[in-house]
Length: 197
Image 1 (cartoon, rainbow, N blue to C red):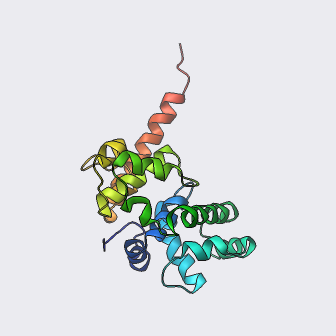
Image 2 (tube, rainbow, N blue to C red; image 1 turned 45 degrees about the vertical axis):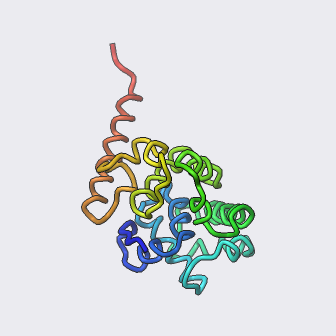
């Protein structure tokens, strides 16, 4: 079982390390919300449901309004608890339909990184960038290394990079990743500025 340090909370990180669904849900929630809180939310979700590990079947079959209530908290599991509860339920339904409710089946039989990347991209809420980041996270920290995974993950798969959640192994690397993201934002802002004549 991998030892993760993404949520910076022992109980939350322990769940991420042993429960593939918690990891996938954390990745889903990692948008427009602080990274550590997004990856800490699966632990809160499991606690509120009174379970030791998340179940795709349980979440897929839950009453939608009840799941929204669970997501609202307090504290809320995301900045947009209603829409993210719905997206989590969509994700779990797809996992039940295609992968027997087991996220690890997404990657267990993937013949190569490109196939795994395509499968990840079919998950609700997983765009091209999120899929590459998650592929890098699986490869770097979860022991999922089909042939060509680094190439499929692009720059996120680079050894020693500090670009994303895939590279967070403790408080120091969290700060390095955060600094990289700030630089990227500032560069994008600068590029968007009209140039004066």
